[in-house]
Amino acid sequence: MFQLRTGDKIHWGPFGHLVRELHFNASENGLHDYLWLPELVEDVCKAYQKKYGHDLKPHYLSVLHPCIVWFEADIVYEKGVLETALSYAYTSVRDLPPDGNATFGIDCDGKSVSRSAIARIEFLQPGQM
Figure: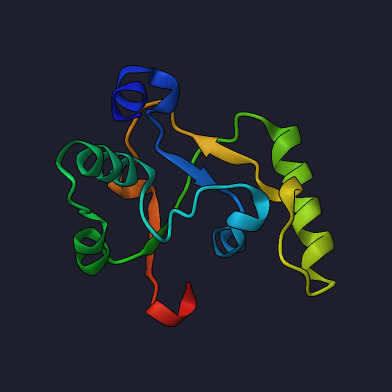
């Protein structure tokens, strides 16, 4: 998986979701839980364990600090953004978690997010996840 993700531009990201709360309900929406372990790190750990029989995940989980990076990006697909916002509004006013209709996200097409585009970095406490 690592070679697939690094060799094909479609996997380069960085990626982001428009709805913060989606990260706290990832598995219910069929998404990877990035607050647990980044997908690429998990792929490397799985490959290492398969080849060498040693699980590196506990080490990474002990040293990584989950965070949500808030950043500004251009809207490429306005309809998707509006649908996501309406879906999130619908569920949030009913005190429901975001559903699969709020999973629209951002793909920066391999271009890093500039420091000036980062609005905030929210470090999460263990009980928040």
